[in-house]
Length: 183
Image (cartoon, rainbow, N blue to C red; front, side):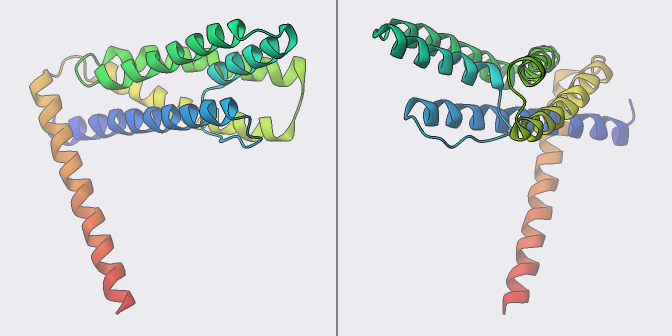
C-alpha cells in the first residue's frame, strides 16, 4: 500500500478510536450523573449502560432493596469496560474496532426501538443523530481495519505516530496564530 493511502486509512482508524473514547467518557459521566440522581444527560454516549442502570434504580426503589441496583451497576460497568477494552487494545488488535462498531450498532438499534415503542422524545432524536455520528466513525474505523489487514503492525504504528506528530504541529501553528492575533 502506498504511503499516502496508508496514512489516509490510519487517520480514519485513529479518528474512529478517538470518537470511541469520547463516547466512553460521556457514557461514564452519564452513569455518574444518574447515580447521583441528576436530571442532566450528555449526548454522544451509549444508551444500554445508562438504561441498565436506570432500570436498576427504579427496581431498587420499587422493592426497597439495593440488590437490583448493584446487579445493573455491574452490568453497566461491564459494558463500558468492554468498550474500554476495545479502545485500549484496538491499536494492536485492530479487529476490535469492528467489534465495537457491531456492539454500538446494537446500542443504536435499542435506542431506536425505545424511541419508536416506549416513548418518543425530541431529545432522543438528537441522541440518535449523535449515535449515527459515532457509527459513521466506527464504520470508517472498521473499513480501515479491513484495508490495513495487510499492513504490518510496525508500519501501522509508525504511520500512526507520524499522523499524531502532524496533528500536534498543526495545533501548535493554530495556537501560535491565535496568540499573535490576541497581541
